[in-house]
Length: 119
Image 1 (cartoon, one colour):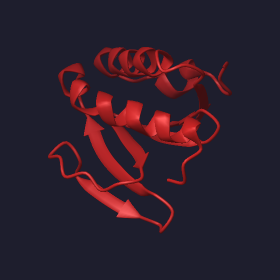
Image 2 (cartoon, helix red, strand yellow; image 1 turned 180 degrees about the vertical axis):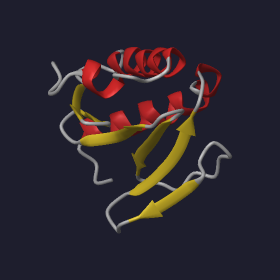
Image 3 (spheres, helix red, strand yellow; image 1 turned 90 degrees about the vertical axis):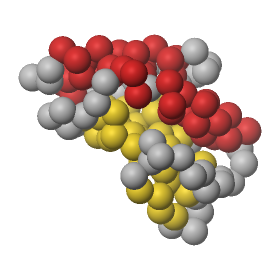
Image 4 (cartoon, helix red, strand yellow; image 1 turned 180 degrees about the horizontal axis):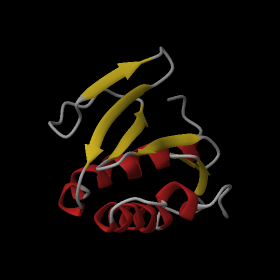
């Protein structure tokens, strides 16, 4: 799927390291199948039939919130919360070496979203 908004807008003025990190994250998410990127200001939503992750592009990090149907204890997550419908796990990525720790969780959230399971 094509995205809404422009990635150049959310990445404007960001350090090259952050732009490369976002590009790697985006490229990985595209391997899942049909993923739409909805970008506005400094926010990017990743969705299939529903949102499975959202990003905030900060000055020196990308804040990644992944929506799962279970609670995960992993040191990559600095915050975990629920609204009663899903459990959101939040991490801050500062460089590409931290991305592999999130890949499995991103894929899991995507698969839950396309399976139509309540998350």
